[in-house]
Image 1: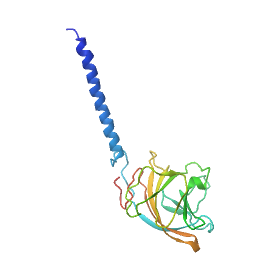
Image 2: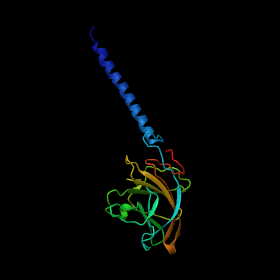
Image 3: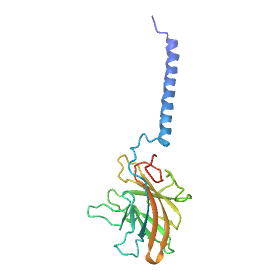
Length: 208
């Protein structure tokens, strides 16, 4: 029995088109899942989100014994410095402007030629209050650029190079609650989601 060339010629392209349509649909659904709350590509969250309130001092005009920076990856207060092993010990420093507003200064601005491993920090403000802000966006961050804010302004933080195995960022939020000008002291509230790639900014173990 011979092959009917007319049937093969028209049937094969039709099958190919069906296969291609199925492939495109599958890729589209996968992409939509990745852009949503599907955590299939993320490791299970292990660290709870906690709101922390602390005092930090202006980097300029204060004693070198006082903390003037924050490390989001460990949620610790630091005095900015380059350690003996060549690494930096902070992600963002604090300072006061001439009119007593708070300057948030990423590590790569403080140290223009940062040591290997210094994270890239993106900052942006939010119109939402600190309490109402429940999820970090993925866009709008200005990498390695200082940001000046006043009391009550909510700030979002994106930390690239925070030690995540697949390069996923960490996200955080903070707000300046008060400024004690005479002491050059700044009272801050912050919450850091230390689970790689997770964007939830509410207390407890995040699910997305």
